[in-house]
Every structure is written in structure tokens, then in C-alpha cells.
Image (cartoon, rainbow, N blue to C red; front, side, top):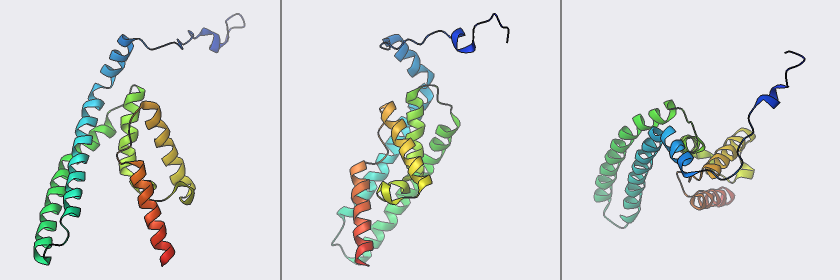
Length: 168
């Protein structure tokens, strides 16, 4: 580095800390358009799976054979949705994020992949899982992207698991 040249940090242009213009938002959306489209498909397929889970819990009180038949049909439907979900997941992982929105989409997918980190209250999970969970939650919050499952349900499920373990 030349003694007369300014330090590196002075060469950079100052960032505009003001509001983001609508054209900048459009440009950011265009940068991650492929990820946004993939995310729409991802969320739609997760909704299909949730709908099948809801149908399963509605069928209580039926005869055993009918329940087995319904469960087999449900399993087949879920496997079909999962088969359609796999290429979408692979594409999300392979597509680079160029904006915070794209990063949020990738974080939502990561949360789905490691969803077991939300099965237990955060103070009861190991350090590595806690770091991953907190990072994913921070990225999703900054990007304005919801997790692929309701936090209340995840926390309720964790409390139920904790109660069951206490009873044992």
C-alpha cells in the first residue's frame, strides 16, 4: 500500500442508510426472483402436508380397518408430496441468495430441514443446535420470513414432550 494513498476503509463509498427506494426493492426482488418462486412452491407443498396431517387427526373414532386404510392412503399422499418437494428443496439449496429476502428463504428451508431444533425449549438443547436455531430465527426475522411451522405449536409440542418425560 502506498503511503500517500488513503486507507482501505476510506476508499469505499458511504452506504445510504436512508429508506430503500421502490426501484431498489424491485431490483432486490428481481435478484432473488428464482428463490421467491421456489419458496412459493415450497410453502405450498408444506401446506399440502399440513392439510394431510389435519385430515389424519380428524378421523378418530372410526373402525380399526378403516383407520388403517385411511392411514395407508394418507402415507401414500404424503410420500407423493415429499417426492415433489425434494427437487424444490435441492433447487433452494443450489440457488444463491442475493438479498436478505433470498437469505430468509434459505433460512426457512434450513429450519424445515433441522426442525428437531424446535421440538425442545431452547434452554434445553445443546450449544450447537441453539446456535443454529438462533441464527435461523434471526435471519428469518430480519428478512420478514416466517418459519415453516408455527413457533407456538413448536413450543407447545416441546412442553408436551417435557411433561411426558417428567411423568416417566
